[in-house]
Length: 306
Image (cartoon, rainbow, N blue to C red; front, side):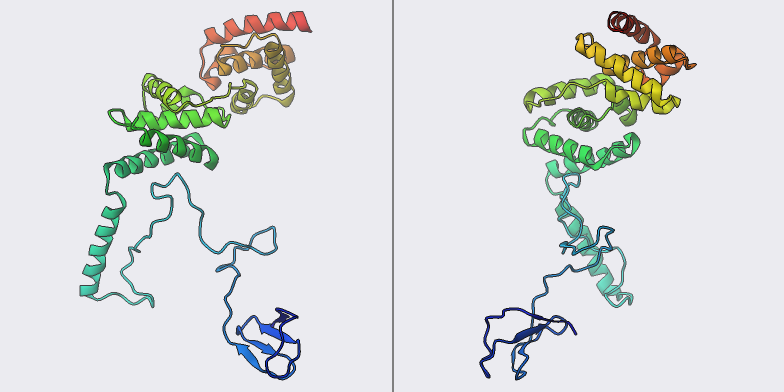
């Protein structure tokens, strides 16, 4: 039995002593001197389930998963279980089974009543597929869902492809969170033309007044080098090359992935690693011509700086 003092100033109505205790198991509040019970119920303020978290300490959670913009109902809708069993595990009768089946049908219809809800449900379903293909974090998906919901509110979806618009929202989210994913990566993952995504992205950028940060090519180095198993020394030198190019403003207006690929090739030549332009071009999804053109400018910067 766990007993604790709730309020030391509370006085027992029978004996007048300040000795009130509370039993956290039974919920009784009583006097420790004379045993007089004041109340028999106590509202539990603890969690409804244990999470077994590694951090330890008290877990303030009392409900399930938090709401999410990546779900069309934000995770607030109820779900009727597909199992035709009651609370004790016994099978339902035939009449009750048909009633529950009819309730499930009306429940699913009520969730997607308007055309906008159906549109959002289809778009977020495609977004979930893109998340797995591109290995994106939950924060990027939440941002993409937020952008698409704003576009839906302003009526930008009408007359446009859902696939292209949700892909454009995802690309905008990657740009906003500085996640190194190119337009070609998103287009290949969604099997959509790059031109369609670009058109929708420009519309989102203009209508929603999005403020996109400039992509840092240094973030693309790790992605390319992980595919080619390049050493840490080479990666650090490539980052130094890009930093010098940024200081000289040579990287302005150029493709970040092409700059990162050229810097890695220059670093591989400097450190004696056997990597061809074709290898780096295939890993970075840019052409060999792009790498050669960027390589010339980066090498001139290195000659003047180092």
